[in-house]
Image (cartoon, rainbow over all chains, first blue to last red; front, side, top):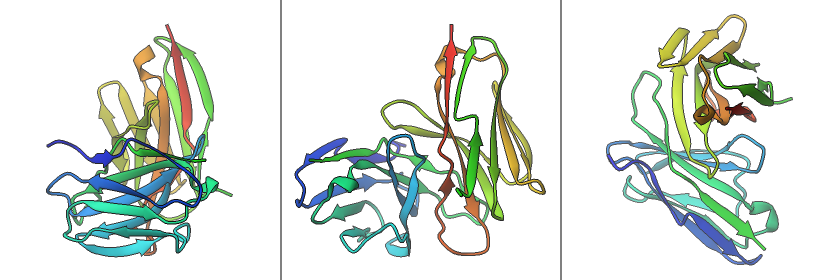
Length: 115
Length: 111
């Protein structure tokens, strides 16, 4: 069990550029979540996958944001035409799909700074 | 109004003190999580509750579903307990399957 891995840890980009983040969940976990966290706030839900299916997207996820999980394993989150307001920590979490409520395991996050 | 409210927002205590962090929520839930976040972003899940009480080491979490309230207690607090403690709920009845988070309680334990 290597835990949830996110890359890169830090990303600095200029406004208007596209960025892509990657999340590798715990291997047997089929649920994967993306969250965004700004300074002094709790994380906010963005989207989640069950296997390769994207089952829910928050209204926070504008059309500049897209997430994929093509083979039901790793996931990518892409932000197009970045804006300064996109600066935040992007967190990924995974869990097993059980009928009983499952425990979430978080990655260390990708800190995005848009200049 | 945030669906999940935590109190206090900030708490500074001396080593050895008994710590209580409170969480109130306004929606029906299927589960409540307590999470610990250290500087640098890493989040660790401490407890997941749907009823009653759970204990792990010096940490105790309780939930009262009728009152929509949960507490996290730390006994014999230690400086290494210094972190942000976040309460998060999983709303019941459909909708987004992700968690709704509180803003966190920033705890500092002084030696």
